[in-house]
Structures are given as C-alpha cells and as structure tokens.
Length: 426
Ligand SMILES: *Cc1c(COP(=O)(O)O)cnc(C)c1O
Image 1 (cartoon, helix red, strand yellow):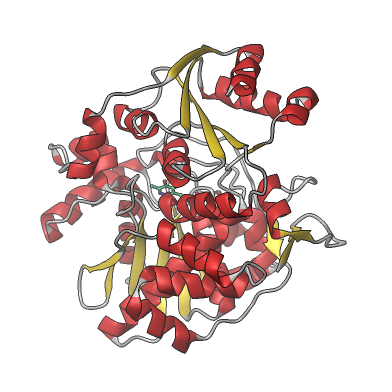
Image 2 (cartoon, rainbow, N blue to C red):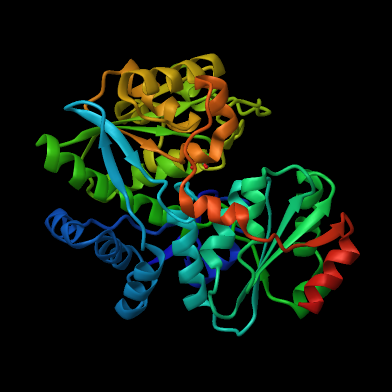
C-alpha cells in the first residue's frame, strides 16, 4: 500500500516509510491510502474474540500489506497491552472506554502504534522525534516511543503552562525520552521546532521527524477500535449497525471511523460532536466551511477552530450532501457539558470526563442505539470534574504513581541556537 496527498490531483504515490517520516505531505496535504481495502468481518469477529491485539494485527496487515506479518504482530502486541471496554448505560447505548492506556486517553491507540511501527521502519540507528506540546500530545508520544530502539524523543513544553499530571507523564520516563522545559509559551515551543525543521545544516547532520497527530501512522490505527467496538456492541445488543458518536476536535478520530466504515465496518451513522468550536456541525447545516480561531472550553483537547482532518473527511465523502447521508452534527456549550457531568454522576453513578460528556449529550440528543467514544479518563480533568460535581475524581494507582515519581527535564531558553546545540549533542 502506498499513500498520496489529499491536495495532489496527480496522486504521486509514496511508500509507507517515506509518508510516515514526512508526516505532512510536501504540498501541505494529508496522506491517504491509494485504495481502500475491504476486510473480512467474519475474521474480525473471530479475532476480536481472541484479543484486541490479534484483531488489530489482522487489520494492520490488510492496510499495510507490504509490511511483513512478523513485524506487524510484534508491533500490535507491544502497542496494545491494555484494556478497552464498552460500558452500557442502558440496554441500547453506552460509552466505549478508550482511556485505559498508559496516558489515560484514546491518543495512546495511535501514538503507541506509531512508536512501535516507526521503530521498525527506521533503518538508521539514530532517529530523533522532535515535538512541541501544550500537554496531552507530548505525553502520548513520549509513552508511545518509550524504549523504542534507535529512536530518541525530544519534547518541548512551556514552563509552568502544563498541568502537574501532564508534566509528570512526560518527565518521569527517562531513557530515550528527553523533556525540554522551555522558558516561554506553547507558540515559542512550536516556533523552535519549526526552526529546526527549516535548518538545512541541522537536517544534514541529524535525522529528525515529527509525530504530529495527522501522521498516517497515528491516524490509521484509530480505525481499528471501531471494528472492535462493533463486535462488543452487537454481541450484547444483537444490533447490526450502531450509531456512533465521536467527540471531535481535530477530526482525526472520527475520520478514522469513517475509514473503518469504508473498509466494511457496519455503521448506521456517525455523530460529529463538538464543544463551542463547532465549524464542522455548522458546515453540516449550512454547507459553508468557515474555519476560525479556536475558543477555550472545559473540553480543551477539542478546542480546534480549523480541524486538519477536514481534508480527509472530504476525501472520504466528496461533498457535503454525501457527508450528510452518514453524518449528523452536534455541539455543546460549557454549561451543558458541566450539567452533563453532574447528570451522569447522579443518574448512573459514573464519572465522565468533559470530552466524553459531549458524547453523552449527543447520544441523548439523537436518542441513539449505539455508543459514544469516551476519549479520556476523568482523572485527567480533575479541576473540571470538581467544578461540575464538587469533588475530585478517583485517581487510578498507576497515575498516582507517576505523580509521585521524580521529574527530570532540561530547562531551556526559547532560543533556536540552544535547541540546535542540544539536538546535536544528544
Ligand atoms: C484529542 C482529543 C479529542 C479530539 O480528537 P480528534 O481526533 O482531534 O478529533 C477528544 N478528546 C480527548 C480527550 C482528546 O485528547
């Protein structure tokens, strides 16, 4: 399987390793597969009954068909060693819990696959992943690449502007993970990273790549859990095709589900659920796509005003009329999200994080038969939970352990030459 850019009418094809190391296509588009393979749902059902990793291995083999089977099975068994479950709220709907991985959010599914796969595709003995983070992406990438041979990870984060928990997740691993605490803000971190990628001298002396969320190695494996969820949901309800609500920000998660549907995963429809950053739900109504600056909300991992994966969505559906046939929109205000967290606790005795609460609201609005994706553990959003219900959520032992570990990082000025020296000295 090769890949081409959503912006390239001539469809120049790139082999997997090249597309993966580039991340973004040279013309600024996103990589998509040259064709959409069809899967055997009977095989999916059988393997899902064995383990998530076994099912993911089959699906990865169908898409990445030029990667040896032994490599794929090694990648998925290392990446997927944690639980995934469907928590039913009533007889027909529930929450697909995707937050039982090491960083307690669904981004582990993409980041861990990418980490393991990058390690296997990398043919040199030193590759450096360079990434700037405002918190969550850095922790998922750090955990995803932890101990991957031949790969170093340098994560830049702004001094004093990430939560203690996020900092702990990036700075307590050690080994090949190198956290840089930058005296500056997130924009400074991004500017520094960009400057390194634009420095021909550095590029000629050091192999660097990014682990951006639009990377196809993070995007594609997110389609696998939709197949698994289908098996869990239909086994319990007897239903043939679910309605699937996806709390969305950059739209990587939901477009991965749409890819799964095109590969043969049965679905009745998708609901694109957003917070106040509602450009896509608005587009579904008006047919006008109007990206804009993001606004801050209590579901801040979804605060995206110009979703990158919009291009993949249009690649999959062609036009808004086609999109409307399979996708409905929904958006919630902060007040509605806080109310929902309270309602879920009162009615079901269940603590939901704010992003998943948007999913709950959309599921209720459309009275779905299906499930919403629960994208993070409430433990990651203690402040918001406390604001909603008046008490802090339970903190899982593994997370508490991280918080108690000693944090190790390098303090750095927001200086391009300092960062360059640091990278060359690694
Ligand atoms: C990243 C993230 C989202 C949004 O996912 P997209 O793929 O960007 O749409 C939702 N919830 C949580 C907790 C996230 O970390």
